[in-house]
View 1 (spheres, helix red, strand yellow):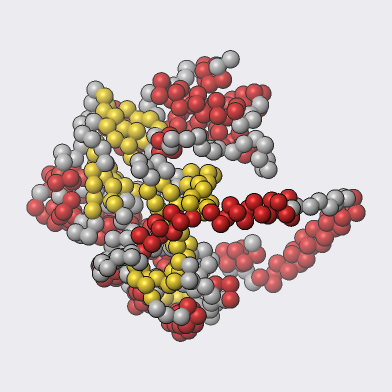
View 2 (cartoon, rainbow, N blue to C red):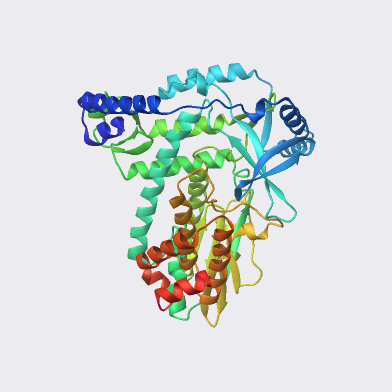
Length: 511
């Protein structure tokens, strides 16, 4: 906290010494009082029992326990042999195909780590501690909402030699993203043509669909999905695109450097005044070198073997979403600039096209986007249409249906497609304040309201949620009080479905 305050207000950390000393004295006093008043009972762990240890050992010898994709509070027990076979197939260990995403490296792990430490210190002045002197590892989680079930492969990079560099690149690309977003927002204001399709959440989509519905202009909806986006982007094209984006962003801030501090990046127009503050300063060439180095050193381990990802971005690394977003944006923007020159009318039809990383939706587009997919994206990427027809689709957890030239919206949860019951939302018996339990359910009720247009759809979703809430330990009196606060705070949102607070409580509580 002191470091943050010191940086934010440009105050020397020594000015906080007396405050810190006084605070620690108060804490020491409180701890001493508790030590004198509390009696700590000794207890033995169940895991110390011989029969339990033996049972767990037998379980570990046969199964891998892993979280389920889209339902992280649930775990799957997977046959260890099957789990290993899926990894073998993904890595292409038993394949003779030369166009593989991963390449096995016959190098000593310690030598790779030592080289990383030397390179990062020399090129970017990054010191690698002993706790980070490891290579990331690959694992996979089951996608149980697919039929048949599929796998999501993740390179776990919470601790690794390139972690610090990856965090710096993430900060830089995040800043580039904001700069490009602001630039395109202004271009859209003056030209009425949208070149930037990326969205951070569903809010702009819902807002636009509601405006179209108010004018009875709902005509068509189509959704698309990139199959295996992260493992299909060629490194040479990715480097070229990110280099051009770096040039574009630096062109907008001439004679500037990027200042990285406390996990954030911003432009620094007076680098000399910051040079001795212990912060990182990167010029355009260093940014390009950092991106290239990270992509050229995508090493990870599986068991005792070492692999290198030679195509695509490892899912699990910090900058992966920003790299994918900016890579796709580059080709979308390039296509739109050419289309504006040849057919402005067609270019304006892209005003209701949105993309959230690898999910894309085109509304009222007259199939112009669908017909131009090969002209927009590089041939290595495969984009498939997901919905059947053009009258209904699901996008960003929203079920969209066209009825009488209006968009009917309701919440769509992929977890509903699971063929079994899953753990969702907290339990009141959890080891946490009970207020979090009630707040979680109330926020979900509000989320459903903001994503739904029909009262019947809202009641169906919210009543199922209320049933879950009571099944997981909710008290009637506290639930009622929470609902009253929720309604009064967001009355305009709920007035669409209920004409009064009493109606809201009666229909949700149903007694």
